[in-house]
Amino acid sequence: MAFEGLADRLQNTIQKIKGKGKVTEQDVKEMTREVRLALLEADVNFKVVKDFIKKVKERAVGQEVMESLTPGQQVIKVVKEELTQLMGGDESKIAVADKPPTVIMMVGLQGAGKTTTTGKLANLLRKKYNRKPLLVAADVYRPAAIDQLETLGKQLNMPVYSEGTDANPVDIANKAMERAKEEHLDYVIIDTAGRLHVDNELMDELIQIKQNVNPDEVFLVVDSMTGQDAVNVAESFNEQLNISGVVLTKLDGDTRGGAALSIKAVTEKPIKFAGMGEKLDELEVFHPERMASRILG
Ligand code: GDP
Image (cartoon, rainbow, N blue to C red; front, side, top):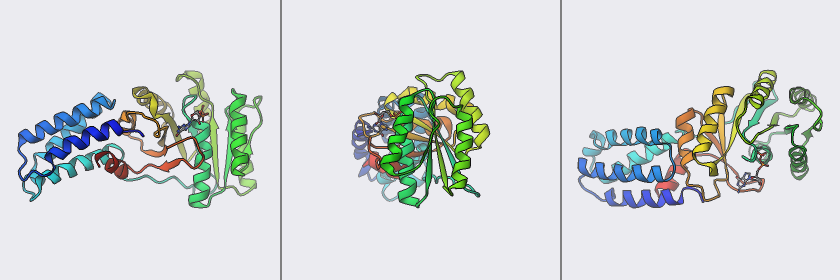
């Protein structure tokens, strides 16, 4: 599981301060020093760590702690609240268009988990919200991606709109919208092409699709195993496409978790879902508070 190392270290650190009947500035200093190291070791972005520690310090030596009857526990509460804030604060909802279909565009680098997540998200929308999604194969460069989406559609018993590899992705997206309207499907989830690296040609194509279908959500799918690179990728996609949220995949692996803790702070876009495995039901709504509790024990 992700975050194990970070959780161990943070739990050790806060354990020391937990029972204290009096918390001195020196105690706070020592604790934040250890928290800082733990976060850096977990690969959290340097600047994000700096801001986080500053906030915790300010609050931990402030009145709410010093005047509390249980200052040790109060300090831990501060750390937990700030960690929750760092990951996005409140859990965020998925958009619903005033007039169906609601359009979700999935973007991200190749291998991040876009196609898999498209299937998982459709599954979750049907299971949790009783929605009828249409999956759209707009990655025309990789025949395997189209096959993969069609297979997912069969497994889920859900319609897939595809025109093979010869069509233009913008046309595919437009026609998929018509089909969704005709068949009264209420979500259109567009699986777009990915590349190994961010490149202009790809971005231009994504921008064109976006301008044409005017999506309600643009979800960036990022592989949490790629560490700081995930943060850079998120920054570039956000600059070009103004994403509306992030799906972090492969949190079931032994990622250190730093990306998860940095992306929200750097892009100011919420992490909406977390991929917890390869299976179609292994996508979870991301709850910042629950994740903070999991990390801090
Ligand atoms: P795409 O190129 O972005 O469309 O990526 P794919 O959807 O083809 O996924 C790439 C690989 O990552 C596949 O082997 C998926 O099964 C795997 N994958 C996707 N999401 C997760 C996840 O949350 N956990 C794990 N363990 N594997 C995942």
